[in-house]
Length: 114
Length: 112
View 1 (cartoon, rainbow over the protein chains, first blue to last red):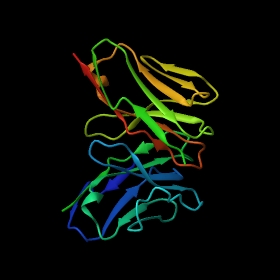
View 2 (spheres, one colour):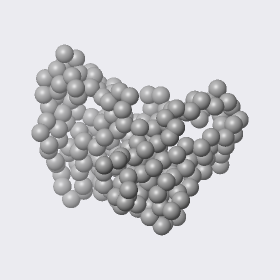
View 3 (cartoon, rainbow over the protein chains, first blue to last red):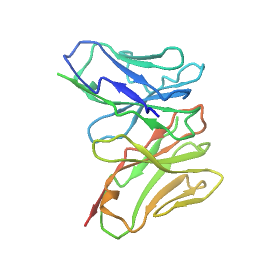
C-alpha cells in the first residue's frame, strides 16, 4: 500500500518568504509527527498530532513555525519569514495510534533558504 | 521532557566485527525504546525495539539490551557487513501520548 507521502521533495526559497510543506500519512494512521533533520544532525522533534487530541507543539523552535492537520489526515507545516537556519530536511511520519509503536517516515522535504 | 543522549557519534569497524551503540535517557517513566536505521539518502526505518518489561531482545544479528535502573539501552550488531553501514538512531518515549525523542545518531562504517 501507499506509504507516507511528502511534497514538495525539494523547496528553494528566499529569506523572508513563507513556505508550506505537506504530509499525507498512511490511511488509517491516527498519529502524525514532524521532525527536522539538519545536515549530519539527529531527528529534532517539532510537533505531534494524535487523533482528536490537542497537538503537542513543544518542539516548535519559534512562533514562525506552525502546523495543522485537517480532517485527521493531511498535515501542513508552515514556516513564516524563513531564515537561513531553517534550511534542513523536514520529515513527516505516521503510526497507527501512538508514539510507542512503529513510525513510518516519508522521504522528506529538503528546504533550502537562500 | 525526555532527553536522549547517544554515543559514539561515529563508529568504524572491520567487516565481521561487532558494533555497539549506547544511549541514555532522562525520564525514568520512559517505557518504549526503538532503534532506527537511516541509509544514505533514504528515510529512517525501524530495525528493532524493546519495551521496559524485558531486558533484552534479539533479531538475527542485532540485539538490544535495556537497563532500567541505569536508564540506558544499547544496540549490538554482530558479524557486521558492509550493508550495515548507515546512521543509527535510538529513541525513547513515555507512552503513546508523548512524542518519540531521538538521539543525535551514530554513523556506522563497516570496512570491508
